[in-house]
Image (cartoon, rainbow, N blue to C red; front, side, top):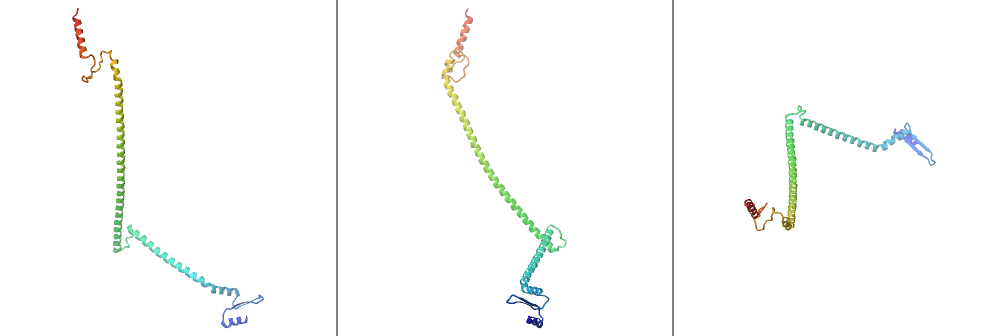
Length: 223
């Protein structure tokens, strides 16, 4: 303890000494105001290096972020000013060269817009033509199916008519042998001769009509 005191006096330094004896007894000496303050100062000097480096890194990061923010802010303001100029606003502060550059930029943008619009119209026209072709093919297919269906219906109708005529002819052929017996006693209807002309005969035949006229004439002259 004496040596520590002498060292603090000779060097004019703040000295703190902590001694534990073999029996566990504590001896301490502090040339400063108090031992806790000296220890706190010691901790700051010994363990404050990493904290200081970390703080410096944080400060650098904050400064870098602030610079990036300022750059982005300036860029946004520039873009907003350019947008207003493209809309025809705030043109009073622009010079002749800036106005010419703005005009060229507008012309280029207009050409690009027209080209894009024309391309979209051509794409839509191509798509519509493709759809039209598909509809025409579908229409042809439906028309062909309709014609086939109409032919089938017409053929079936013709078959029904032919089948009906054949049935009627068969029925007439079955009824024709009975007709002479049925009309044998009728003097008005007479069967047609197979060798005669196919003319319709209604009433008496020419021979019967002549005989009837002669008989009636003779009865008028007989008393």
